[in-house]
Image (cartoon, rainbow, N blue to C red; front, side, top):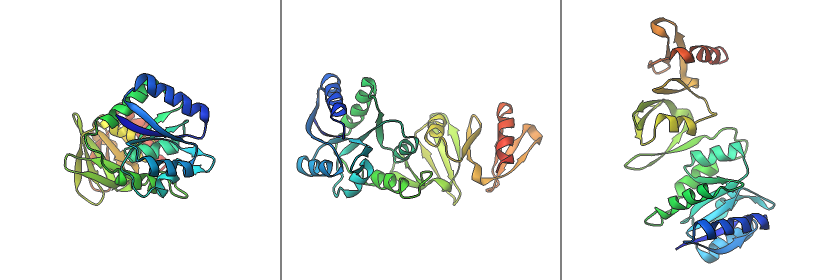
Length: 249
């Protein structure tokens, strides 16, 4: 049984989520409800849940702030939110989960399944720290991203990512300061993760940080030279778009 708390300021939304859990996730038991940051913090401290469904915007503060005020974070979190592009990007970069309102049953089941697969309750402290750093005062774009390898979880500065290269179902990350990581994600998944930042995909096998473009060579079908000296091919259908981006740098 998964013991959960729903932290949501709207009573109707809490009732809807409880109904969906009862119908589609019968092994999830709602042990408490809260309507804001302070009451949510108190409920977490009292009930020690396995899972918290956490609204982002509430009258007495952000759900992110609740995490900041929580001393012991040995529970899973699924954020619930209306569409908020920056908040969602920050959540994705921190490798945490979210549900868009109105909540779709299939997406709720998938989120709960991720929690269910955790064989041992563990702390998400590193993920939460990345999230809170990304939504700090005056933040425009997330500054850090969580990358998981077989050995460990890595906290990476987004600006330190030089380029990414596809390797079938894996992706190689190469960094400005040297070194690289092999991540168990396709380049398509990585592109979606970093979408809206300073990354472009000039070729089906490559994703690059536009901050580190040195020049564009028209010969040999076209390729980009990065500040590292790496030469990245440009596909014909991406050529005009790449030229436009470079002109605007």
